[in-house]
Length: 250
Ligand SMILES: NC(=O)c1ccc[n+]([C@@H]2O[C@H](COP(=O)([O-])OP(=O)(O)OC[C@H]3O[C@@H](n4cnc5c(N)ncnc54)[C@H](OP(=O)(O)O)[C@@H]3O)[C@@H](O)[C@H]2O)c1
Image (cartoon, rainbow, N blue to C red; front, side, top):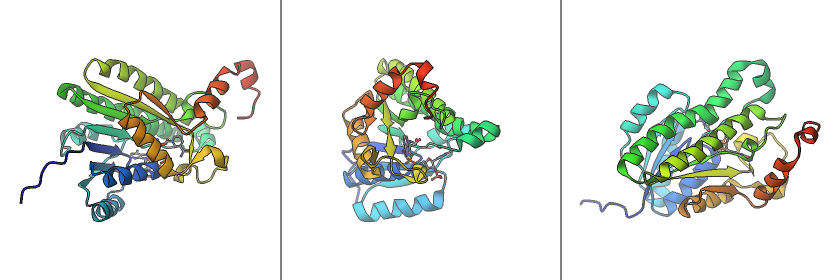
């Protein structure tokens, strides 16, 4: 029996094994979207794909993707089972700030995993979507990209680059029918910050964050702060003069 094409859009999630990406994948699967999940660890991903198929009767495919393997990105895009309606960059790497300062490969890994890897794959996806005349690109940045702090400025500067890149791409993409969304979360209780103590009222569960992110994507927001208060907090933090800010141990 021929299957009817799904009336729902297709979504590609890059870095699909991120805790928040997994929560987004569940939400999309439960709503009937077709899913392409891309990540480095194909075996773990295959298990998750089977689980989503079983629980939600969803159309889900697993794809192998490494954000730092730039040479593989064009082939990755060319061999996608379909050009998705929505593509979400969820990969990222907090890294070790102290190690990055002393050991350049760690700094490079942070920069590549949060910035250049995203630029490489987003450029290629954008060109295909612009050719088609529609599509949505979303990427997860961070409040860390809005002001450099002594505790994470390698990560923060890479996210700052991503935020500026997305702003420019949005500007270009607007004229070619493609929408670009910058997602700016504060703290999310994921593997990435499991070692950190963060204020409970400012720290979202992955499922709450995923809910807010999918809503921002559906509403075609341009820039969306993920979590209440973060817009205000960052407004205040950004107005602190450098002469004072440099003295704070943030
Ligand atoms: N958690 C927070 O408080 C917070 C706050 C602001 C922004 N963010 C951002 O939110 C996004 C999602 O992170 P998360 O919090 O869900 O943390 P997470 O669970 O640690 O997810 C990060 C994911 O990125 C993947 N990744 C790292 N390098 C990669 C590469 N070279 N190629 C492909 N995938 C790669 C990891 O893959 P593996 O599973 O293979 O390791 C992991 O699945 C990230 O962009 C992060 O920077 C997080």
